[in-house]
Length: 241
Image (tube, rainbow, N blue to C red; front, side, top):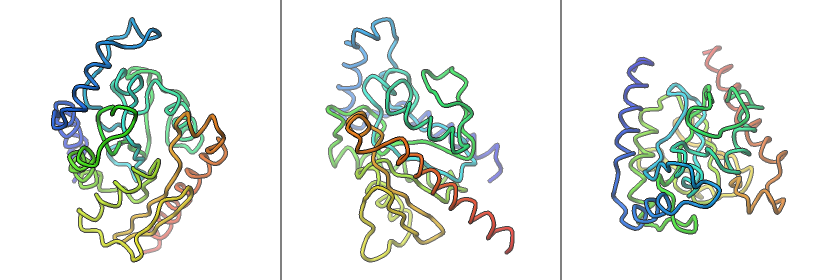
């Protein structure tokens, strides 16, 4: 698949994601949130739809979060954009060389990702940030399609336990044989999988984690240092083959 074709197919998938209405509870919540808003964003025209993935179609790094934030991605229409979690994430990606700037406020702020694509286990903002098992299941085919289209992906960073499990399930459904025992989530966990995939677990950069010190800036940056190290090692091996 040439780069232009890959970008076109990823864009087509994103358009399909935006029109999804498979989960009635999530549809009601995202649309009600978009209507009611919060005081600080009264002047915003909320997105209020599923939020597609974002980034470089030729990416080797895939970052998988849980779901859009009610007043972040659900407001701006871009994953991890306009909320505190996004501030933490894009700062780390910028320092690791995957983003051209450390901030993300709206879809037209000039942010570009290089060698990195960001997506989520669930594409709609869920009540209390807790998607149900059936909602995760209904969204899984989108992650599977992204894994099929993003053919250069070799390293996956899963933000949080739910995203970690969603990645394992999607990879298994894609035919990747998982090791026994099955990898278990913990911060900094690195699982080498079949077909050359490396799955790295990280605490989610939620305010609950970052404000309590469970996830520090240094801890989070180290995750992307590990990701970069694995990508560089794979490049060296490919150059000598």
